[in-house]
Image (cartoon, rainbow, N blue to C red; front, side, top):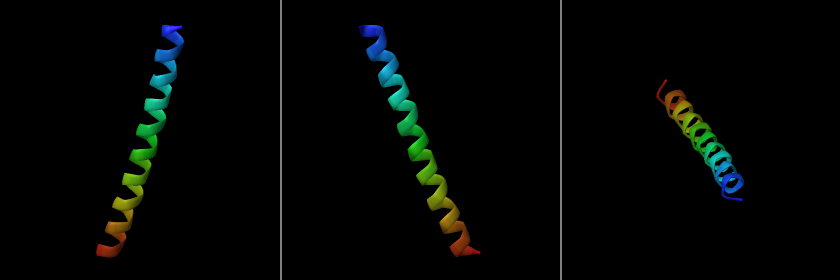
Length: 36
C-alpha cells in the first residue's frame, strides 16, 4: 500500500513539474518574442 502510494505521488510530482516547466518555457518564449 505504501509503495503504490509513493509511486503515485512520485508520478504526480513529475507531471506537475513537467507542466510548470512547460508553462515557464511558454512564458519565457513569449517574453523573448516580445523583446525581439
